[in-house]
Image (cartoon, rainbow, N blue to C red):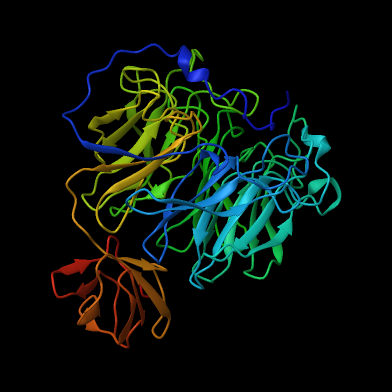
Length: 492
C-alpha cells in the first residue's frame, strides 16, 4: 500500500499496545452514540453549531453510492447533547470521499475538506479515486463542491487535504494538503510535499506555499491563526532532520520554519498547534510515522509521543513524554478549556491499550482523565472540544457497541461560557455569539463597551463590534447568570 492510502482496514493496530496505568479519580464520562456504519463510521473532530448541536465528519459509512470509494464514502452527522444522531450528508465519491474536518463559517454554513474524492485523477498517489475536495453544506444538508484538487498538472494545486479548514480574519478559508504542490520530496510516491492554500467562500483557490522537504513535508494538521494574524502549523515530516517541523506563514505566503524536530525532542507531529491564552503554542508529536497512512501503536524506537510548547519566536520545550502506561501515540492536537488547562487524547496506550483522554497544565503536569476500553470507544484520533455548557465532547474512531466509533461526553466541573465567531473584528463587524440558554439576554459588552444585539435563538446572539471597543472578554448577561467568552475578542 502507498503512503497516502487511507486506513480503513488497519484501525485495530492499537491492540498491540499492552499497558497498565492508574486512572485519575472517576469523571462523569458518557458514551452518547455508537455509530453503526449506515449512519457513519470512523468519526473525527466535532464542532458546536450555532443551533447548539454538534456536527462532525465520518471517514466512512453512510448511505451514498460507491463511486470509487471501495466502501461507503463518509458522512457529516449531527448529534444533540442528549445523543440523538442524524445524518446531514452522505458523500458519494464524486462529491467527496472521506471528510476529515469541518468548520462553521460566519454565514452559518459548514465548510470542510474530503481527503479523497472529487473529479480529478489521483492514481499517482495510489488512490483508486480522486485527490480530495473542498465543500460547503447547509445545516440542512444542501451540499456544494467548491473545489476538486489535482485540477492542475502534476497536482501543483495540492492533493489529499487531510487537515480541514479554518476561516481567517479576512473571511477566506485556509488549509493544508498532505501532498501535491510544486515542491519535490525525495522518495515521495506522488509529486509534491504538500501545500498551504487559501480558498474563498465561493471556491477560488490560491496556493499560498508549496513545501520542499527542507522546510517541511506532508502537513496533515489544520492551521491556526494567531493573535498576530499569522498562521501556524506543522508538517509531519521533513525539516532539518526529517522528523517534522513547526512553521509560521503570513497570509501572503512568507513561511518561516520555527523548529525542526530531531527525535530527541519529538517526531512526526500530525496535528496542528493551538495558541493558548498566554500567547504560546502547544501541540503533540506522535513519535510514529503513519504506516500505510494509518496509526500504529508499536515500538518505533523513538518513544510514545510528546506534548510540547513553542513560543511564537520558536523556542520549544517538551512538557511531557508519554510512556505507554499514560498513553501512546497522540496523533491528535490539543484544546485549551476555560480552566486554562489543555486537553487531548492518545490513540493508544493506557490501561487497556485503547487510548486515553488527558489533561495537562501549561507547565506540564499531566492527569489521565479516562482510559478507553473498546466498549466505550477506542483509537481517539481527534482532540475533544468544550461546548458552551462547559462539558467536553469528543469521538473515537472505532469501538462502541457496533465497532464503528463513538461520540462521548466528559463533564469535568467547568461552567458555561460564550464563544464568539469570529474571535476578532473591526468596529462594525458582525459577530455571532454562541452560548447556552441565551433567551432573555439583557446586555452584551465588548471589554466593557456596550453593543447592540439580537437574540436569534437560545444558543445564538447576533451583534456588531461597537464603536470604542477594545480587545478583551465579551460578556453576556442573561436572566440566570453572566456568561464570559472563553477567549479574548481582538479588535485590530
